[in-house]
Image (tube, rainbow, N blue to C red; front, side, top):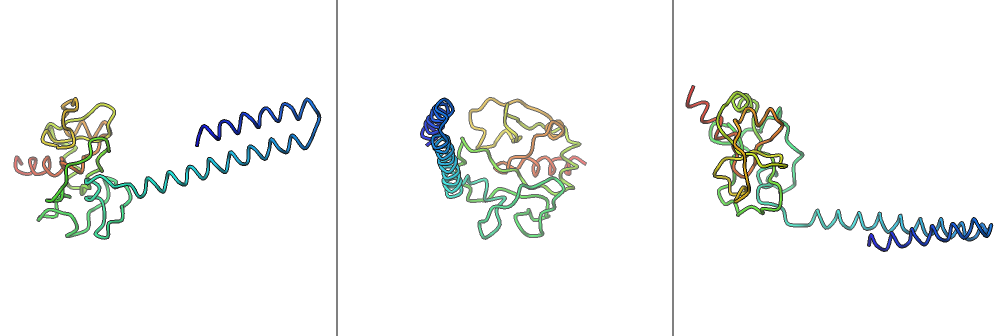
Length: 185
């Protein structure tokens, strides 16, 4: 599709050059028409690609961030609290991965774990080690199935947060780090 649009724009440019040299308004309007057709094709292609992306199967880690009806939720910020009883541990600590989690797709970035504010504070002050992957936004536990054989770099959880990394929804590192910090206190 992109090649067709590029070809249309090249033809439109050629027609415009001809229109200017010949002094013909009809040829100039043909050039404008070709550009408009190219724009419509680009728009149609974009809409089609978005529909394909929305209907594509989603990564299993997204189930943690979804509501019970399966609709995707908005990205979660650190200040958002998780509603009582929805995807929380028994103590209401943080979201845990589903028990029937399917092996995650290694090419799709996992969702961000929802973490309540109290756990975020514990994680930010923690020296517990988490793993980060270069050019990836999430930090993980060493047991994360999504990490697989990727090259990782260990960092203290607090430093990972400080550098802008967010917790992985597959392995839920904030839950483990907060639990570790509570048990050591």
